[in-house]
Image (cartoon, rainbow, N blue to C red; front, side, top):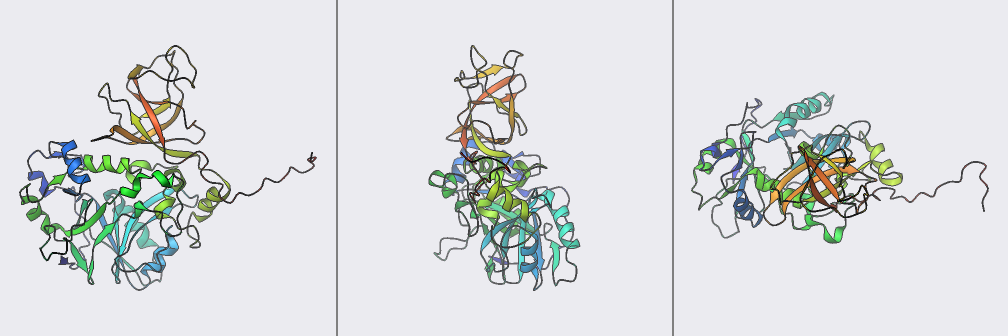
Length: 411
């Protein structure tokens, strides 16, 4: 492990990953690898903890000062005031109506709080936090210019046998800067709407380790037999399998945490006031989220994958317009006769090495949980079986009895 150095306040420009020198490198559009020529093989390696993912396109913010945890606690959805050094959590920043604006993966080392964010979040979140300091003893810094993120499904710190780990994970104040995703269980103060007995998050061992950007060149130069790498396509497929939401994919301008089951790991229901808390409490206790997350198992017989944002519709029925009958397999042409009714949209999609083509989608809460669905791709509808993540019954946890209307006669 290497100690953290002094902050670099200047944010770097477009990412040029040193891993682009690896054989088979295919850019995912953000400067890091979508894959290195074998997406499914890389996915298998990543799933069994035998590969790492270059995430140097992501951002890192730090908050220092004695008021940092109580300050962040007052602004965001998670209970952070007593966060112990080395403990991983995540938190959400909501607007006044409870809609998601920002998300951060959080780690504290006893002196500094590290916020791991998507690259597009660095400037808006950093600027907003800086404006909210007022007279508090906190300082916000952008560390994206000198700190990079490496993703993995296994511990990069070594197996305790005394051997030096290949990845030089940073330390700060004797704390290894490794964020371990809390998604694998319902965190204290949280709540999960999903069926806990069969939740695939139980097997989600994902973590993000921080390294110096100056160490990336040496890492990228290691031979594949010493350090196997996987692209972001492999990580996306495993994330979808785990029903794990992400800000840059599942969230739009209307999203509230309940719709994504993000109450599971990023919201503390009894921590006290923060912006948007009233909506969080009302929807959870006496209401229902207007949309719900589903995982879709897509028909792969035509070899067509939808893109993010693709429309999800009630599936057409061979020989009739009833929504209750079974659909035929394969893609169905979109015609006036089929008249598909839109119920939502795809948020993430991937080809999984075992499950085949899969997607996450947000659909209207009232969509029949047993209804066959389809995804519109150009002039075709791809059959999709829904796996329930957030049920239609989500919310109304308080069980408040319905009051009779004024003047109503009891029978």
